[in-house]
Length: 577
View 1 (cartoon, one colour):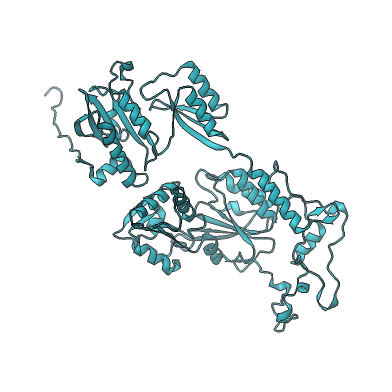
View 2 (cartoon, rainbow, N blue to C red):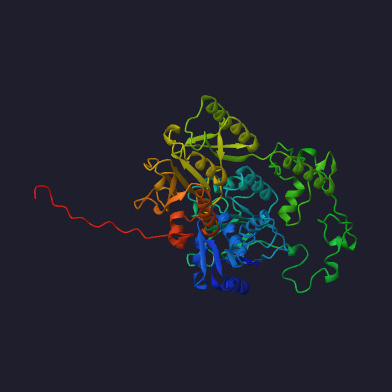
């Protein structure tokens, strides 16, 4: 039985601006999944439902949880403010589904429910700033390289787009908005109108109208959308307005227009258009202005080694005149003295883009590297290989879990992994995964449990889970390695295993795991542990630690959770009494 995924954009946050379909989708859902702030915005609509809320940067876990619940036959609403398809959750949910082999013919039904995006809600509060061509650019470089964001800013600024900046600034990201202003000032007048809207249509809504030169004098944060006007945008009585361009064909104050309705869309009435042939009423044909070569810089497409952005050279005279008069700016691409055809420009752009896309893209390679589960000794040869793999620009960190965490940018993560494995090293993923920790079994003297620790690492190590989970293995009843304090701990004693669940190693309320079973036969321990971890993977909420999961579900297989009892208070007499 397949469930249903409703990917809901509920608009700015106010109920008045939520669509009827968005309300219905939330109300008909069994499970609501979203960022904590978004959950609070729809709290009145979700009483009595299963709610999964996670923090910022945990979008993937939300998408995975949504798919998991839909696979169980539930109707799931994945909520986003604004529009779910614009910097929202729609694309990510589809990506997770596709990784699982989903198609439209599968039982899980998917519906994307649009909402009012920030660019539109903020524009409405400012006046009408996006009446002409506009674009959105996120300044967050957590997922997009800053070099690429710079290119997009440069291109949008040079092309005279109205620009909406999302995620302009946060507590840690402060330079991006400064760099964006610097790039825009190369192409726009300092007096260009700028609107800053924070928390549109919410209780703490703030609206500031300023200009490009002074935009940084005002508060800008993650809840702010920055809208930057184009060369024609103006301010009137506190409103930011970008003309659509009707004045090119219409007299806005005249009752009778010079062009009749059937004449307004003729090619002759559009001297700026590519297909212009002859003017209306026998007037002169508009030809490109003949100018000295020094005033007509060649704007050629960049090579693959250069940023894809427009030239920062001054506009030619014809373009300046057209810009000042409000008419369209004629193209300035030339090949020698011959204007380049639009088709040639497009073909060159496609060729440059294709060439760049063929180059390997560096990725961040992260791994946990160790000599093995039981072995704690690196050889000198292994350390040399490890240092070479990390390289001068990478990072290597020793962890309390007896492995080296390595990080570096590379175009060949598979090749690096192969080098490490060839040196006899164990390579595991890091992050929200299962880590198997084991003692050194007294340098191999108490070695009976080693095969089970190694098999657990081989079968389960690196498994993706709702939250990082550590499985500790001790080879004798002394348990000196501390397995009983881990999320899951097993202790080998008298030829069998004791099982501890729900330990917590840090915090003021740190505690050992609960002893839930003694004397588990060694030939059964792999299956027992695998069943526990699979149950946690299937039913755990995103970012939910194992000890909290165990307390919530109360029972995992035959193992029941019991609340820890507080130690009895013991009164002691003061010294000398």
